[in-house]
Image 1 (cartoon, helix red, strand yellow):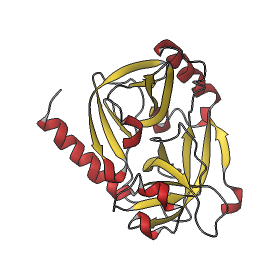
Image 2 (cartoon, rainbow, N blue to C red):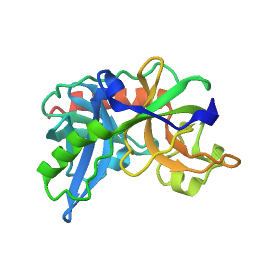
Image 3 (cartoon, helix red, strand yellow):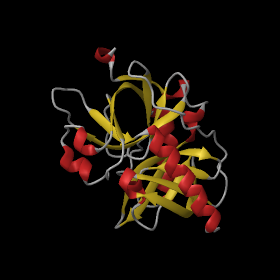
Length: 235
């Protein structure tokens, strides 16, 4: 199975399902956009990576529509964040898997990175996000392993240690690039979220790209904590 990855599918074959809830998250600063990804887990909730929303000013775009964020909950040690939106987005949203995928399971990562090199304002970004849905691909891969912490991965861990604390992480045989951070990794069989893209690094004795993200169980914990936070702090 590993020899056929990464393999790309047409976005149009998947966008009608929960994968259609993938969003573009962007910060505009100094005349340029910093772009990341995220995914709707409820009409007014977005799950993403903490480092994607490290600044205080950013917008969320989906299907050519954009809005600012009402509040956010950040868990730095797992590189996870949950965003509360002012208004529900009219798009499909995804469920989080009950458990991590099996090693033989096929996973997929929607690659919606827009061409933001010519973006000069928010309107340009929205147009780029709309165009990206027509040209983007679904990248297939598989779970390599789950580790209790970064130190157990035997990876190029200096980069990862700057992102993760002492919490469980997963590694996937998937290539990922700037702009994929914060995007979902889905189990192809269930079409449920199993991880969120954080960073790419090399593993010993493995030549293919490895994408790391928080463990599935950790995502459940962070989402529960986020909802408790939003209830205590209504926006």
